[in-house]
Length: 448
Ligand SMILES: Nc1ncnc2c1ncn2[C@@H]1O[C@H](COP(=O)(O)OP(=O)(O)OP(=O)(O)O)[C@@H](O)[C@H]1O
Ligand SMILES: [Mg+2]
Image 1 (spheres, rainbow, N blue to C red):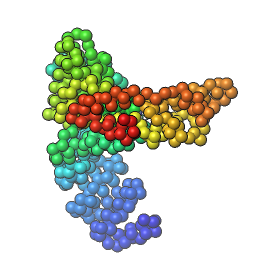
Image 2 (cartoon, helix red, strand yellow):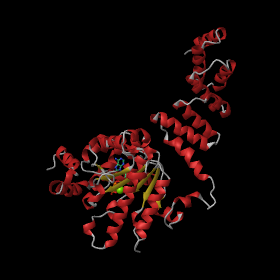
Image 3 (tube, rainbow, N blue to C red):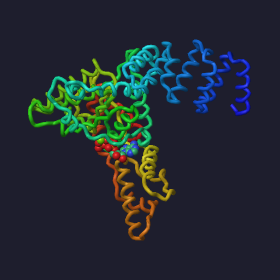
């Protein structure tokens, strides 16, 4: 709306102050223009005009929240409609009245599950945890039934790295889409999915040739979910003393349960869940059993906890892992196709000085069979050449296509060997079609 018409509108309101529709329009326009003080002035001019109009109440609530008078906002947010309850939760959060905020949030979601906002919920909840408890530190209380203390668990979790999202993952569009549909969406709207009796949580196993982005995808998934991401270092979980590994594993799962929403990521999971018949000593098989029972525990009592695992030797992973309720979603992360390679090259080059006329699509064409990691090596080797040239000439030289010529001769693709092995498993032991995706991939790429 231009300024002139807005002015006329306000003049009209002066004449017919009880025109609710007009008042709403004026306030809304101020609000959209971020003129909160002005909006508030209009609201205050006609304190009785709003009556039971919930749209008006929502608007007023937002206006007062924005100008920092949450108490006044609350006066408008008294009804029990879902959206009003949600806004009330936000306002109560700003007043640090967390318990009431939490109830308001629950009331809102009860009425309309599509309003779920995990971030708001986390804020309302996390602070509740900060209330000091007599036993000293609520976190210690959280890990019950065993004597693993907090620092012990911290040590098993690799430090959180910076947040990664799907934007940093080049290509792999169909995998990303599947992950979005099957993982992220149910995760953001858990109650909605629960209504339809869809399970949230559980496990996803990513498999594929080395260096094709499994670890990266797992981190990006956590980033997209906006969840705590626990990258578990398996070598630290494995312990030579009998029973110790199981105890650590249990403590980790407990920690995740109590910090939901959370993602537990077990990279190279075959180290933990190798086929039980492969190992004669009972220790590893006990660990597998422990892992399985922790996962089963999830399907019964956990929402908002996701277990991600990755492996490049799926055929060594115990079949029991793939039962429903455990890693029932198994996704193949294929070597990047030409378009994906181009996208990966772009991601990799954007973060380094380059002279802008490198033909990514040509390089992508020449690098069939290269994994993401191979491409990274390729770019790094080109960068080395550019650094060398810079040192020689005494000024910074950007990476250009000449640098790639040499590196293209040095770096070799690494995915072919994996695909050959996978093809044999897909042909001769494709129980319940678990490697179908690999077969489809091979067929599409003409490798027999
Ligand atoms: N799709 C991609 N987009 C951008 N970078 C990628 C992609 N795939 C791989 N890379 C690069 O390759 C590196 C190795 O990828 P990542 O560690 O995710 O592979 P992986 O599948 O987990 O391999 P491994 O099986 O050896 O653990 C990443 O750090 C990243 O820089
Ligand atoms: Mg990895």
